[in-house]
Image (spheres, rainbow, N blue to C red):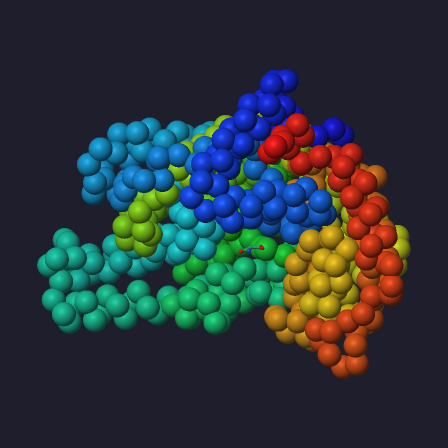
Amino acid sequence: MTADSSIAAPGTDYAATASEAYRAALKVIESVEPRIAEATRQELADQRDSLKLIASENYASPAVLLTMGTWFSDKYAEGTIGHRFYAACQNVDTVEALAAEHARELFGAPYAYAQPHSGIDANLVAFWAILATRVEAPGLAELGAKHVNDLSEADWETLRAKLGNQRLLGMSLDTGGHLTHGFRPNISGKMFHQRSYGTDAQTGLIDYDAVRAAAKEFKPLILVAGYSAYPRRVNFAKMREIADEVGATLMVDMAHFAGLVAGKVFTGDEDPVPHAHVTTTTTHKSLRGPRGGLVLATEEYAPAVDKGCPMVLGGPLSHVMAAKAVALAEARQPAFREYAQAVADNAQSLAEGFTSRGARLVTGGTDNHLVLLDVTSFGLTGRQAESALLDAGVVTNRNAIPADPNGAWYTSGIRFGTPALTTRGFGAAEFDKVAELVVEVLSNTQAEGTSKAKYATADGVAARVHAASSEMLAANPLYPGLTLS
Ligand code: DSN
């Protein structure tokens, strides 16, 4: 596969134009704070010469990146489209409406909200919207009030007690859920009575009967599906059935796999949007847009989601919403489907590359964009493995595995994702080679004594692996043709 055309070169002078734009921008930055210009150049150089395997990262197109550097950054626009708390928001309205339109069309959603600044913000908006729709609105009716201004202090006490005593059931952090899915130290684990479902101890897969049993016993207001580190697909039709059986709202966090949904790799029961009441995502992971969040909702939840700002969020980042619109327009192109399929195919190749070399993967493999390697068989913690790989120019992140003996800080796993290097043009052969290089580093690294952080890698291994990866990276350049000098 060659470098993906949607970020590389729609026209022959595209790279030259982007180069010109970045050279000019760096010159302007340099005149004020040269060290920032230097760090910006260095970041591109570093990203160009490292194997970016962090499952939640990608490379956005120059069009997306350039869209963020404009005067839209200077505009306040709290409120919603056509209904702002600030004057002169007509152009922000255009931008936000376009981002929402592209999102609705791309995902087939009745309603889209483009304001969240991140995935966590998107989840907070979703929680608020579900509470407002299911608890506050009926609560207000019970209290005989038409408007919050009519409530007495005693009424407020009653309402707060109701809002603060709702239940949330989500996937546990160590089996692949996100912090915001009810992890106890997180706000989601404190504002809700929480319970977690995990995965089957033998297979590592979600056991839907166990989720159903937990839901029936716990009776959550919100059932959260979706993950950050689960290497398999989820049957969202089944999740919706379970939610309906217990009267829960199904909220799906598709931050990690939104690109696979947009690219129609996940369809039918695996596409969350037709099944969930509320779907949240980030825009920068497999979706390959700017850093940010997005909420999709049914008509029932749309009015409350639409009040995300100012009820939950600060003023929208209009420059980022503009970049979301550009990225979503890119994701609607046929080339994005090829890209998404390649992301999934490449994850297969990476997983097979590991298992064929004797490494143990959580669930034994993958059928999405990520692979979770259990590094205990190398005698290492995740922290040691992550550091040893980084020494060799392989950028990953350590991650807990189910029932992790080393906890959430040191961990026992390394999470790998294929979205970024697939954008650069890596295919099956390159990902097999990546697995070979990773295994070479880890099998030549040893823990130092009983330390969970210190390690030593045999002499020459990091340099050899870095040289081999540099060769592959040079053959699949990041932003081909883009030069800063
Ligand atoms: N930080 C994101 C990830 O790496 O999965 C989730 O918040």
